Every structure is written in C-alpha cells, then in structure tokens.
Length: 334
Image (tube, rainbow, N blue to C red; front, side, top):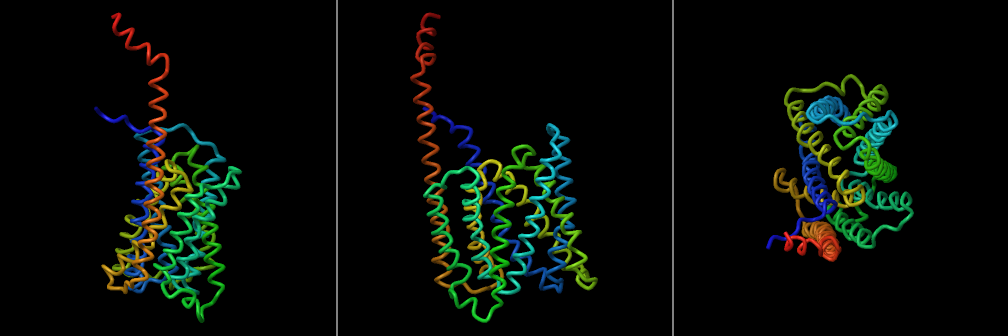
C-alpha cells in the first residue's frame, strides 16, 4: 500500500528548507573564494562593489528569461519599490558586515551578525502579534552558542584590543539583514521569488551607485585578470545562484525557519577553510559545529513529524466524510 503524499504546504516547506540549505552551502564558500580574490591584490571595496556590479545584470537577465518562458501577472509599482528598498537594506547590511570584520575580525563579527535569526523571530512576533514557537527560540539559542564555539573559540578574549565600534556595526548588520529577510517574505507574495530577486538587486545596485563616490577611490578599481576571473566565479557560484535559491526557499518555508537554517553556514565555512586552505580546526570548533548542526536537525525532524501528524489528521477527516463513505456503496450499485 502506497503512503499518502504529504500535504502541499508540507511539500513546499520541505522544498524551501532544501533550497535554503543549498543556498547556505554556496554562500559559505563565498568567504573561501573572497580570500582567494583578496590574495590576488584586489581591495575589499573593489570586491564588494564589483560583486554587485557584475551580479545585477545576471539577476535581471535570468528574471527576463524565466518571465518569457512562464509569463506572470503584472506587478504593482509599490511591490517593486518595496523589493528595491529591501535590496538597499541588504547592501547596508553587507557594508556593516565588512566594517565589523575590519574592526573586530571575522570570528567575533560572525557571532554578532548571526544573531539575525533572533531579530527575525522578534520582527515576525511583532508583525503577527504572536510569540514565536518555543522550539524555534530554543533552536536559535543552542545554535548560537555553538556558533560562538565555531567562530570565536577563544571567547571574549577575541575582542581584546579591538575597536569596539565594530560590535555596533555587526549589530546594525544583523538588524538590517533581518529586516531584509522579513521584507523579502512580504514582497515575494506579490512578485514571486524570481522577480523579487531581480528588483531587490536593482535596489542594491542603485544604492551602491549612490554610495560609490564616497567609498571608492580610482586605485580601488585596479583589478588584475587573475583576481577578476576568481571574482567572476564567486559572483556566479556564490552570489547569483544561491540568492535565487534563498529567495525561493524564503517564499516556500518563511523568513523565520529560513533564517534559522542559515546558521549552518559558519560551520561549513570553517570546515571548508580547514580542508582547502589548511586553516586550524580546534576541538572547541568541532563541538560548536556539532551543536549548530544538531539543533537545526532537531528542529527539522520536529517539523517533519508535525507535518506527518497534520497529514494523518487530514486523511482521517477525509475518510470519515459522508461523501467518502457513500462512494463504496455507489460503486457497488454500479
């Protein structure tokens, strides 16, 4: 006997989780490729700027290609503007992130930046006027403790002698990224994930053009061929493709669950840096990664059980419906 198929909402949620995990894996390798690009002599400002300038035409091109294959209803001007404003928040979050890395280092900044799932839960709670699920709050708390072990195994000593304004930048980045994720979920209801990705990145592009005169000098754009080649790989494999996957995942799974799933990113980056760049991997980092992966896995297993129970209730309700009971009798009379 074949088991009944999951409810569409459950299938959509599982697909969304898979898309978010794939996007997170690709985003995790962005840090590895960024180190390779920076190692060729390209400046940080050039990497951030060229990444946006190269990626935006790809986003728009893919969106136009898909729109021709599957035409969609026209979108409102308000929805397009909201998506572009969300893209500006994404750029602001990225700028705060790089400023934090410059002031307090990559490890401590990761710990603070990846508090954004907590801010997403708070924003969603305020929007829906309902407390987040206790399991989601517990998952975030346990995963964040694990993240501290992964990104800053030396603890508070990681901030010794650092410019503590970087802490403020990292917090601003976390809040801005949380706003971007929750705004994304709202915009995608009317635009869909593909059009949202295109319009939001147009917003990122416009915001970058407005900021360029204040942050870029002519020497920053002195790019060598090797660095440009690696930058192109990073743009395609670790920016454009995962951004489409992340948007599709948020559309299916929701901003809250998607933000929690992205917490697996730093452990993947640390392990990849150990395997590919020969960086150090300590027992504390391994234990932290296990905490992150274990907490996220527990959440997804719990969600899967809830989906199966909900499907069983629907099946039972359908089997006891009068129309379902009358069907066999009608068949016998035939």
